[in-house]
Amino acid sequence: MATKPTLGKSKATAEDDQSRFNGHVQLQQGSALTINEHFAGGIDSADSATTITSTDTTLNQLSRFTQSSLSLGEGAKLTATAGLLSDGTVSSNAGASLSLLSDQPGTMYSAQSWELSGQDTSLNVGAGGIITGDINANDAASISFGTTDINQSTNYYGNINAPL
Image 1: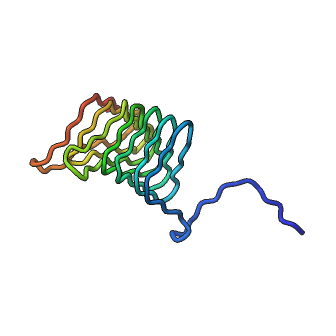
Image 2: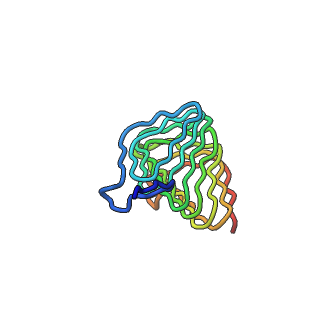
């Protein structure tokens, strides 16, 4: 008796079965990138969409999002270390973690807005970074800047809107 295939989705559960990417991705003209597992590198996106569901995504190359969306799904984790520039909104959903950590003093992180949607979303801006754009949280969120080291500064330009 023949097996009939059915439409569905599967996720690699064993570490050895998970995909790994290391490099630079260029997206344009309505392209879509979904990062589900291990990713290290950079993204240049024009008129496209990037969705991150992975808990192991590192942008260690300058990444640019021009008229493009960047969205972190529930529980996703993104660490950017070499700068992230967006002319739109960078959105994070419940339980997502966005860490903007600078390899070099003065590393720029810029977006029109940083949207923290849902409970337990976090935005961490490391020492030495410069971040611009409004930060908006609609639920309990963690927003932190810099360290306790008085020799390092973190510069922020924008407004923060969050519930008390």
